[in-house]
Length: 428
Image (cartoon, rainbow, N blue to C red; front, side, top):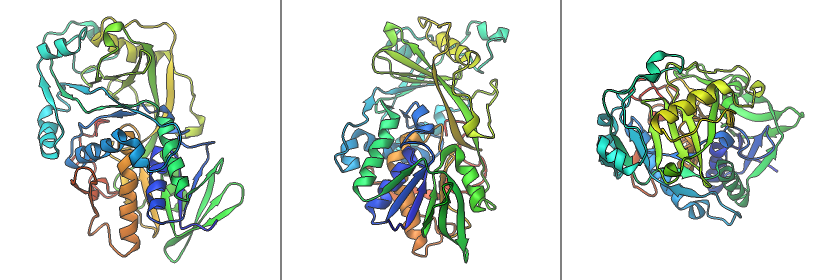
């Protein structure tokens, strides 16, 4: 099949991009080294949908995107079989100095995100069984200070519309199926071997099996392999922000009875987040506190896929500090994934110095939630750039279908000053 665009990667981001380009009339081919959509980083996502970002573009993007999750069937636009489901359980963002509410509450008010400010008393009443002690900064378990009782208390900001997607892999598969319904082709077990160019533009993608796909546009949405794909294409010379693969673990434990109706809890004070599961489970992830070593990797394919007791114990013990009724199992259980992390934890949605070559990278850790709108972002950038607009000089401004909010997409530029605006943490 002749194609206009090759999308590399069929995670939730790549599949969303494929859908929006196919809707726009582009002939799309998606290639992925895995055996199906959502089999990479997406499958290890906790799929939390929250709105507390440190920039106006971050908050507006998350708020716009959540309407897609809430009306998932309508967003897809085609009957694609069983659907991923959005669970609206709310989120409590516990107070922490590194991400003060004074930064994001004005953004909530500007964007229109409903919220409640909770005192420590409110927090105790609304989330029964929670310890409201302030323990900042997060500490290692072998630090004696970890076990010191809190001297002060903290409150929280609650957003009732936050929640999570119950099956992130199925969400990617839903998007892929909708893209197919619009004519997109998916090729799995297809590893990219090279990117051909001529006269300053991309001309084809070559695969490891020797096949060649001529095209005018390539979108690199390869997750933790995205930097490697950029190297194959010889792009990135003007990037001010880099991306690296990061091994990540999320623990699975049984939730105490008191926590089975909890909202999601973002607890940067202790360095964890908590998210319920259908059936009474609890996901416990980390917020990359400075006391924990980051597991950067050179080869995403060589990462050990079994959770380690050291990480499991650290995450779950911190969670038990916040939730004293939580039992700490003596065997590690959870998921392992490889994230694609930007230096400042903000994604790059942009063109590159090679004509026709675009990137959606650095998306892990906080961008699953934005998938319904990221496809639209890339479609807008590609449409305008391919029609002569210089996105570096006149950045594309995207207007949200649901909110009417205008989002300046230069916030996700490859050339943005490192750490100039955002928090520089996984919060975004």
